[in-house]
Length: 287
Image (spheres, rainbow, N blue to C red):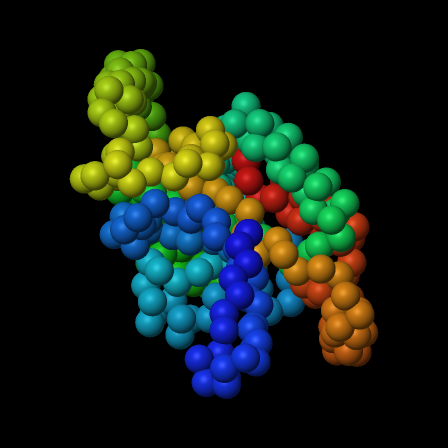
C-alpha cells in the first residue's frame, strides 16, 4: 500500500494545496501474456443473482470472457445429468484438482476467508485461470450439442428397430472389447506416465515460451495441476477484490435488492454470510 501527496501545479506560491492518493499494488494472479495461453477464466463468488457471462460477451471476447458462478454450476449439472450412470468420472467436468490438492486449497482458503471476516470485508472472489495442456474431450460446441440433445430427449422416442440393431451391435462388440481391454488399459497408463514425465522435466508449467521468467510468485497453491474436461490442465488461482468493507451503503444496497431478489442469493451480504456461502460454493464445484 502506498500513499502519494501531489501538489496542485496551479496553486499560488506560499499556499499548500496537496491532495493525497492511496493505492495498492498487488501481484497479478495470472502470468504475463496470460491471454496467449489461458483458455478459460472464472470469477467465483458463490452468489446466484447476475452471476452469468452473457452470450454476447462470450462471442465478443472468446476465451478472454470471464465466466461466473452460474456458468460453472450449469456445466456441472449438465454433465451430471447426461452421465447419470457414470457419476464417478468427476475428472470429466468442472474444476478438477483431485482430493488431496482440493483439501490443501480449501484449508488455505478457509484461513484466508477467516482473515477477511475478521477485517469485516466482503464481495471478494476466487479468480481461476485454466491452461489446457491437451485438447479437451468436451468443448463448448459439444456442451451445446449435449444440452440440445438433453432438451430433446423427452420429445423423441427410439423405434424398436433401432433398439434391436443397437443391442445386436453391443452383443457382437462385447467380446472384442473384453479381449482388448487389458492391453489398452496398460497402454493408456503408460502413455499418461510418459506425458506427465515429459511435462515435469520441462520448465513447469511452460504453457508458452518464456513462462519460466514471467511466472506468478503467489505460493505453491497459486499454480496447481489438475484436469479440465478429462484432460490435463494447469490452474492459476487467487483471491481478488477483497478491499470492500461492509458499510452502511452496502446495507442499503442489500435492502433495495432484497425487494426484487432473494437476499441470500445476491452478492451484497454481510461478511459472515458471504464467507460461509463462498466456501460452500467452492467446496461443491471444485473436486
